[in-house]
Length: 586
Image (cartoon, rainbow, N blue to C red; front, side):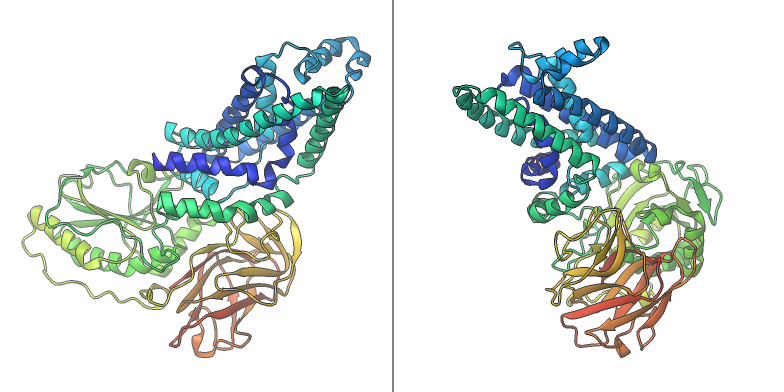
């Protein structure tokens, strides 16, 4: 319920987003018409079409996006013709015979006929819904990411409808107010005709803005600056979790954990089937028959997730210690970034990380949805009867989790269960974070979830652009320098000597990176406060700050031995083509 309210409020906020400007003329063209028969059908068509297209785009893959591009162009032609009939009503009379009827109908829709047609207004709303490209702020990012992970469902569509309904509500208020202004102006001789022509010109300007990509480019960045902070506040207040559903550290530095181990272990439900994997690694597919009589630990993870990496030493140790007593550990690799869908990347990561237990590659999130999971990492503990008895989200509480394993093994009949607890050998990236010193949040570099970028209006989505950072950065601000193309989930350098700078406060700084499309290593140089890191270098950096990006993974670039304060991090890529995804801290 709270999430529906959150989605609705996020939609209401779009009225103050500059990215809504190109479609406002299409809405205000209904000014002067009865709201119930003209304005309301248009807004309904707009909301329903947006919810449908957004749902399909979130779960249907690239073909939906491509198909919608054709729909957008058809809608642009339709709305442009509508705008021309508003601006030049006499144009319809000069068209060839087959188009005269269409022109006359458009003139009626535009207001020349005193009898408004709800069906025609709904059709204009459908076209407007295809053209509407709202800014992907924190709330819409939460909805679309959740839709992609949870799959097509009534809940997904309801959330997107709530978002669209919120936008329609604020537009309806503006339309009703505009109708009063229009009625007052009509009392002046000839004013109604001039207002209609002005709306026609505004519609053509909106068509031009959308055709040139201003709605998803420049205006989208102004929108992020104007509403992103408000939306993020709503997310924090009402949703209570990060937009990407990862069990991560919040801005205050606390690890989000769902629960503590109870004194007794209730039955939470049956262990779902594990038949949705696209491939199994280290094992043939495991089904209910193969797991019969076994205690099962299911670990949802992805290999570039710092929180998942820090839990791995414990999961591996449990798999080794309790294997002969009846425990089966199953990793479910559910990717966050596109490169994590590559089976070769996952296989190499497992080898590097020393993972020997079975791993189900869940690229389609079928197992994720079967568990109704929402987090990386997430641990589910099932007894020998196939019933889930305990779960834990995020890092920490390892002793409680191991006690659960011991209890479930004893219930299954194991007689030699060691009461002692493992001492995980965590080193490098996998070392537990110093949360008392973490004051910087996980930060995405792609424009879809980017926050704290400065200057706020500077990102140009999907375009090669030159960037220049400000001379001073506040804590947790970051910027680009040089030539970059910023996509939805990553930024790619298109020239040598491109940099990323970040003002942070934490012991460790990590950055998810990948080499260029050709796979050649990309050399880099790290500086802290303008100097070589020295003893503060991470495991992937030499003391002089040098290193190279050789594969798509998380890189530890800073580990301060002591004296954690606000520091300015800079990484310069000496070769072009590197892709940067997300900063994490510890």
